[in-house]
Image (cartoon, rainbow, N blue to C red; front, top):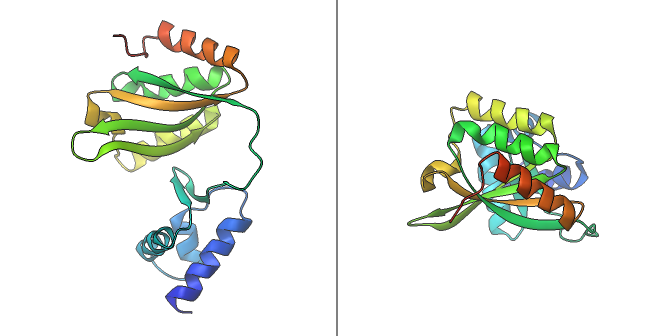
Length: 174
């Protein structure tokens, strides 16, 4: 199978998957290296396919699906990287989902990475992946200051998340 055929099949796998699919799993399925899959994903993105990379793998963005009526807002946090697990657990404990993290980079501008953390298991998986890959939080690029987009059931629930984050000392104070 050539590269074009493989990319069509990758899209089919992503369209039919209910969960994120890792580059390693795709590589194994198509008998190529993980790096070849990463290149295929880059080519698919360049061809206007909206593919998101999450900590669990690749997913197609769901622009055409019916959007649920959930409240979405942002928080500005500041803390040391070793407190990320605690911050995520506070948000999850109060019913929130951490959709992404954003940091302001002096050269690149606003950098955004999808997180999609909505459970304690997701928090644990994120932390395990960061440790396994000796990765560092994006917030190290901005002296700990970062923004999270949070989704929850209501504005009142979001207010509760804010109170909990403030009490835990995570919110940036001016």
